[in-house]
Length: 310
Length: 317
Image (cartoon, rainbow over all chains, first blue to last red):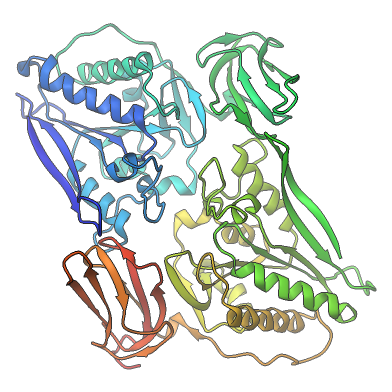
């Protein structure tokens, strides 16, 4: 294993930000290579944990002969935000994942993005561990933009239950996934719940999926159980359940649970008087893909997203 | 004058989020083709300069209601929760509303908010979106125009009594802004940047008020002719914008005042280290010109924007 300094930035009063990558050289120079990017935001505990446990996997749990292609893991880019509980770059609140491909003469987060992008360019595959942008607990899944450069067949090799094949918005043109794809890397985003704590079960699903993907693409030789035959969905498959009232939100179901039409799936309790003021009924037969993760909910907020079945 | 709520959301504990619009209409409607202008501010909750401009405009309209010939809609605080809590993005979601347009009724809550705004402004002949830079930079009153729409918006920008008109290339990511969304929906929309976040610059507020009144008069929305004297803005097409970013992290100490006319090689400021009493870097003007953007917040990282200078790219001012 080789530690690579990806970038270093000095600060007025804090210790320098030093971002490092862990490079595990493969035994076969012709084998495909993969780079894994962990926490780009501060409130990305699961991406950080999953990436760091992958470092542990390659460092301590796999025979070096089984590593065929190069594997680069950058567990965190935004230590400064992680260390003080901020989500974005602490000084100006900019999102590093909106700065790609970066610019060496630009603003601080553009420079960070540029140095990261330089370090991860040229890999055959790229995996981005992303936190959902909204407050939502979800199943881990692959998010893939309909960019024209995406590899939907490759996405299925992770074996997640679901692949969200999403229409691009203009704002997505500055994300790492899109720019990585544009420059020839088959990039995939693994979407993690926005909960700010480690869920070992979900973390294990994510890490197994990454190992499965690397085995199937012959980056490593490490057989594990097969995953799901992934279902590809887009917005048309999803029913959005908005909250008609505000108050204390309690979900009665978990992400991944199957629900029947008109089944009670959650409720809202009046925050000052304690009575149940609304019950959420499933609008269709389906699987809950995500639900609102804060206990206090605004009126009109999206409470559930349900993938329709049947 | 009539105030309505264009979007509401009950908050979890005994409070309501409300985004309000006040409409001023002529006392007597002369015809059906009455023009409408929408003035928007507070899309970023930490930008308050637009609040003053809109107050001054509303106050003027209250005192001159007999002169009004068009409809004026004002939206002082789009991110109303953010304005009252010194929060730039939409609270809880931490989302920049000006990267969320056009939104939709089925999106997450910030997407619903911008969708409601765009739908309400839709149909206006003109819209002006007032921003205050951010807390880091101080800006002279300027109009930002996307080249894609400059043919229709540049003539309007010239009437707004600003100092600078910056015509920039079309950038895909900016399609998620209010101005792009409204321009694509047929409303001629201008973005004003002036002053600094979290503060008011009274002189700029009065300057833009004169510009808005002048534009309204030129568009036949206010009775009278040439009542307002405006300045001629310099235009980015006749020169070049030079950027100065911090080469080192530290504390920026400016050597010049904002808006100064400067010469090539003149000192703009130092980046210093208080702990050791040393100067990390001295920033020098790369060109003659006007210092139209200057760092206001002194803590800088490598790359932080320090200044923008507009000058002749031949090296002459």
